[in-house]
Image (cartoon, rainbow, N blue to C red; front, side, top):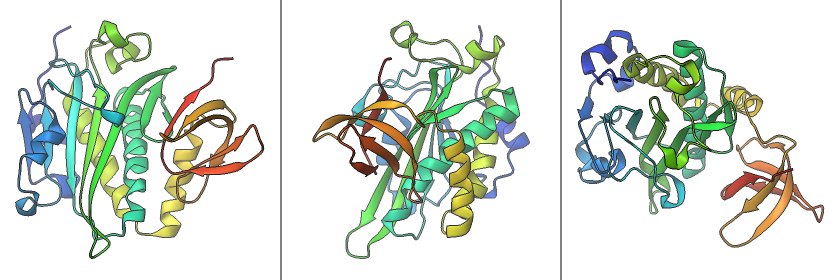
Length: 265
């Protein structure tokens, strides 16, 4: 299956997200799109710069896990944001980016997707997209300096090493995928959601959509907080996008971080 190359002109044909229109950088190969930003002076970069790559030799997800990024088989993209917010609002960037990806997949290729808290998009029981958000916080001002949002969406062939747990747009649609309108749709959907984050009332409306897409509700899960691990039942989400779980001992915990996996029946 021959991949249609990423093309700035084709992306711009359907892109109407003004924040992300000024600079689209498309690379043939990078170590990772996030490391590309790390190599730049971000003080000189405007909000809304987008870096895309045809392949990554060192793509990564949470906890430094490897993210398979073969040439032409995915959307490997990072966005630079510079919100003048308190750090507490950064969590919602990941949440709203996941909603944007789901909306884009529904719009462009008519795929029904769900979200596994906090940053993974699934389709028919397999992971199709991961989102990694990294923020730089000014300790003195207690404000966000910048945020880099990494989005890795599988669109073509799935590597054999992860075929049991991962899927792709092509695998789900059984058709070749033009990634260019998908890139534009993700940015188009994300921009208005991002703008709503400081508005508490509007934020809760989008969080309700995120909650409705949650795959973990009422599931028995294994929670790993990096300090301890335990089994629990997922009860829902709170107003800060924390996952609410009840441990086997009856304790109610609001998770702001950690790894959650569904326990086999």
